[in-house]
Each structure stands twice: as structure tokens, then as C-alpha cells.
Length: 160
Image 1: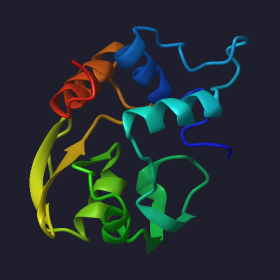
Image 2 (image 1 turned 90 degrees about the vertical axis):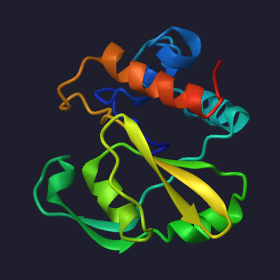
Image 3 (image 1 turned 30 degrees about the vertical axis):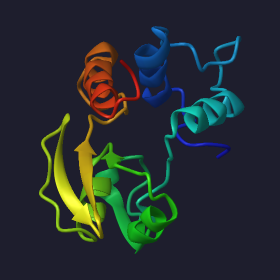
Image 4 (image 1 turned 180 degrees about the horizontal axis):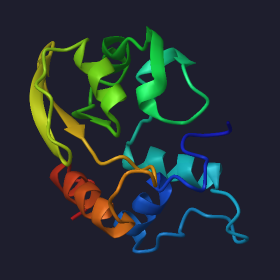
């Protein structure tokens, strides 16, 4: 895959388009058959948003995209990443598997979907946000998902 969330059936970049530009198609190519990775990278860099997986290696236990059929073989060392980005103030997960994988590494309560819990990493207070899944299989309309994300980005002062 060229970049994160490349599948047109995933609404991550539509949510970002709605939240930041008022246009769910903002990151789509003109033919609307793919997202624009360079445009996404530039935008994320300007906003200071980093994306990474909570696992470096996984095994699919069934032939589908459901996280409940993923086995984490090698989790990502999130602390190592945080050491490289000292201004990071929050971590966002979009699925239960990612949330659980991350919580194993930190002493953090599981947040409710759409909310956050605080935890300490070394000398900083961090937030763990558990956001609605951007998969279309998650039973919430795109616009309603965008409301949760808009609130989170406002709390993190990435939007007014």
C-alpha cells in the first residue's frame, strides 16, 4: 500500500476532508478513484499529525479485514516513537485491537469511543483518544463520525 487508509471504502480521509476543509472529497483525485498520498502527507506534516501502526507484524486469522481476526505477532514499541516526537501530546486509536495493543504498553484506562483518558509517559501527560472506526462496517454515518473527530482536533488545538 502506498499510504495509510488507501481503500475507498474507508472514510478516514473523508473525515479529515470534512473536518478541516468542509469537503469529504478534498483528498480524492479528480477522478475520485483514489486518494492523493502526496497531498495527505503534506497536509499531515503541516498539521503535525503522525500516523503509525500499533503492530509491526500481524497475522490474519481469517480472510477479511476485521480486526477481531488479527493476531498481533510483534507490537510496535510506542515508547520508542514517543521518544522521537517529544511534542506529541496525544495518541489516537480507531479500533479495539489497536487500543488494546497500545494499552498493554502503558498504564492507561480504556477510553469510551469518542473520548480520551489521560496517562503519563515519562515526564509528560498524554491523552489516549479512542475514536470511532473509519471503516464503513462501523454503524455510524460519516457526518456523525466527523463530529467526534472535529471535537478531538479542537481539543488538541489543531482547529479553532
